[in-house]
Amino acid sequence: MNHFQYKGTELFAENVAVKDIVAKVGSPVYIYSHATLERHFKAFDNAFNGVAHTICYSVKANSTQSVLKTFINLGGGVDIVSGGELYRALKAGVDPHKVVYSGVGKKNDEIEYALNTGILMFNVESEQELTRISEIASRMGKKAGIAIRVNPDVDPGTHPYITTGLKNAKFGITIDRAMEEYKRAATLPGIEVIGIDMHIGSQLTKVTPFVDSIEKLKIMIGKLKDLGINLQYFDCGGGLGIQYNEEEPPLPADYGKEIVAATKDLGMHLVFEPGRNIVGNAGILTATTLFTKERDDKNFIMIDAGMNDLARPALYGSFHGVQPVVKDQDGMIVADIVGPICESGDFLVKDREVPMFKQGDLMAFMSAGAYGFAMSSSYNSRPRVAEVMVKGEKFEVIREREKVEDLVRGETVASFL
Ligand SMILES: *Cc1c(COP(=O)(O)O)cnc(C)c1O
Image (cartoon, rainbow, N blue to C red):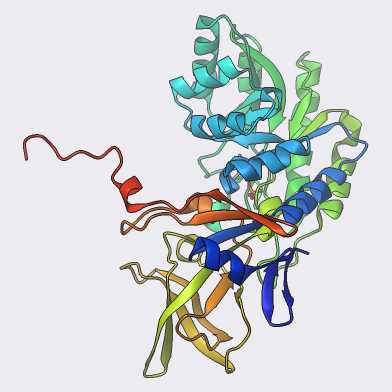
């Protein structure tokens, strides 16, 4: 359920006609519904009612400050994967004690920044990272709270590029090494062992892989307890999928029920890192038809948005529903909807029956709130598009459209030229 619905023939974002937003802000534009963001955060949060837990929204899915602030206002923390994301989240007002820091390649200055900030914990992804964090924390006279990201070797049954919990993935410390690393961590001067972490993949449509992974980690938690290492935080990661097309992912409430059942005897504080599940269906990308052309039996619809604005179809062959902003097309047509980028991978829709869009028609790519703007780039020297948030009858630009001048900021022509 989201707040992008038709009233008559016109697509609305909450109580604002999408075409009115485009008229004011221009095209293409990302539009987010505040009510949908809130609704999805609360649905996830409520799934763990009665259990000590923190929702650490995964910033990388959509890092725009107004989105972060929406969740922070609801008591959310964040999961970050870089110093830049920490900076954004702090600017948006996050409580540092609700920040967890994941990622396989943390740099020294990022580790220092996080230690100075006083984040809750680092999710450690390698043996060397553990040593490094201890060294830096000791030098700073601090102790770093850590969890080890354990790679449980469980197949989440999703796209290979977003599968992270199989043994050959670059993520985490394998389950057979993790025990030794916990023992070593307990002896390191700059480390305070406080948790255990997993994140097995993205866009999961079943709960079973989560539960299987939890069961594997539980065995470890028990063994650690016997050694006198008592963990307080169980970070279950993110990864719960959404409906883009025909998938039927579990509802957060059903996911919650099974996770709570699997973890309740531990009495640990649960941490979750949802990204896509709470922002995915809260955003759309709106674009304008520039031209159409027919070639043999192939039809193309050229629009003003491309793979630099929404990379998922080019990157993973992902599906985004496409809907007219005003329904006045004369029927349907099988076509590719393509962008202006000089790459054949630059399509948003491939060989699909879509409304017969004509020059000037606006269309909305649905479910674009996660890994949409956040993955966008200025490839082909195309300024990144504007972002708008809608709340009821109101809407505001929350990120200005980039200007061509922004594209050359920081660039200099070498003095020897
Ligand atoms: C990407 C990521 C997430 C969020 O994944 P979603 O599928 O968007 O929920 C959570 N934790 C970590 C460590 C990640 O890298």
